[in-house]
Length: 136
Image 1 (cartoon, one colour):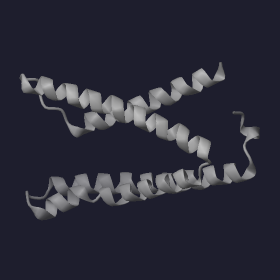
Image 2 (cartoon, helix red, strand yellow; image 1 turned 180 degrees about the vertical axis):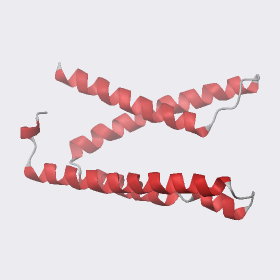
Image 3 (cartoon, one colour; image 1 turned 120 degrees about the vertical axis):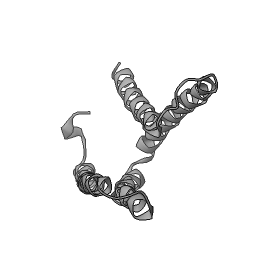
Image 4 (cartoon, helix red, strand yellow; image 1 turned 60 degrees about the horizontal axis):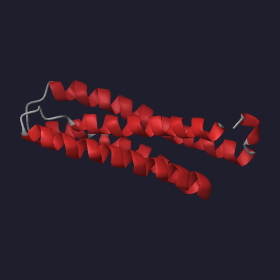
């Protein structure tokens, strides 16, 4: 849709969401960099583990912003996004399940970040495909 097709309320809610999510992500980046910097100099133990996990706190702020935005969406957009999330989850599940068999025959273990990247990548790709398909 063109920008002028959105109501003032929709624009204000999108701006509020952008501010909430952007602030959470900015705090996340700062805390992430600080935790990496300080954790490198620490010895293994509980304090180092807790230091490395501190970026999870501002990540919860991002989750809070996303949940709030989801609640503000109308029913059509909420269902549209949930369908995309379900398909992305299914793609990620199939990949993880299949790769589990490959690990059983000696393939290297993958980081959880790979699973996250597959989920987010499929979410983005499916969103783009659906937008293109809806234009036609």
